[in-house]
Length: 421
Image (tube, rainbow, N blue to C red; front, side):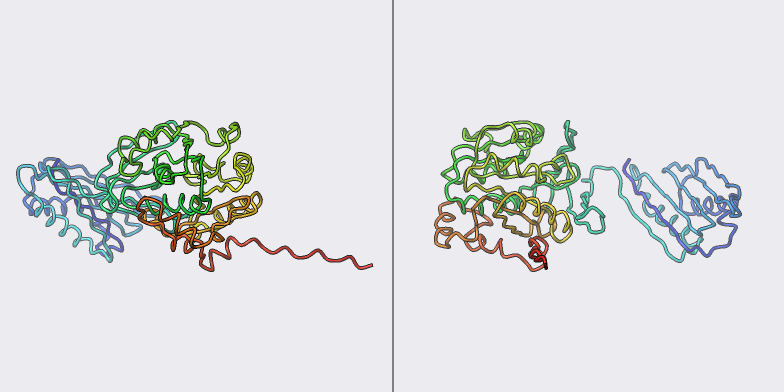
């Protein structure tokens, strides 16, 4: 299968009409240029389509070559042509012949515009890196992406499609249902921001609930706090945990073997509804709201969370990008404000997510920005070496740009008008 595959899309072709509609004329052209290029004709087939709706019919044809094939399709009503040349290079390099053939046929159609692609296929060489693109919003009018050397794993669990990619930028990256979740090279941006501002502000969290977080990255950060006695990790999909154990050790760093971690596989909504446990910190380390995790971003779920939180406890979650998902961010934060007296939004650029990303910390009384600086410095210094979070970052995270502040600011309710008697 080693060979060269050339494709060409031709637009605004200025050639004589016969070349677009006459099968014999087109076949003669292709046959002559094929033989002139030194390629070997084996067989051929051509078909001229009848006129349709007052428009002339086009021609489809193919030359079968000993080296592979040439295919041509014309659309005279659009003055457009597509060409396809593939040659095998297993015993002899036929690339030059293929290039010459395509060049001469393209010239014969005299296109005003052309798009030509070269694809090296097969052989012992390493396949080219795959470019993985992901939309930043539902409309898909903004995208970002990364190169992937190899898909180390692709599997369908009962709940979602899970992928592990080997990326040049960040090493191994986890994708779920087509969305990047975490990666070896930059996981600390997200996980340290999710965990440490709330844990440091609280000062002494002992029992922590993580809903989602099956990659183990959040749990690993939580257990850097010496006060933590138990972490309950409620993950919907057991397959995510198994994939993390097998492929993402640089992210979880063996946290699944820590006796303080209690793994609960199942629905996080149901766990919160049914449990009698109480927690000092709740982390919603979830997939996006349009996924099976959608119910966990609702006001009804926030009401349930308040029941399992000790006085002074906090819940932290990501709310999406305020740049590209403004309405989603506004809706989630509004739901939090209807349940919790203290709601503090923060944000940072997360490289794997390709944007400035929003988070929210909610509590009955904990205000992370009101903790004295000396206290934050002392608590942060007691943590093992971190890559992102420190005392300066603690306060900086909550310093919102004006557009984000306006987005999540609770509107001031007008005073009730006095009745005039």
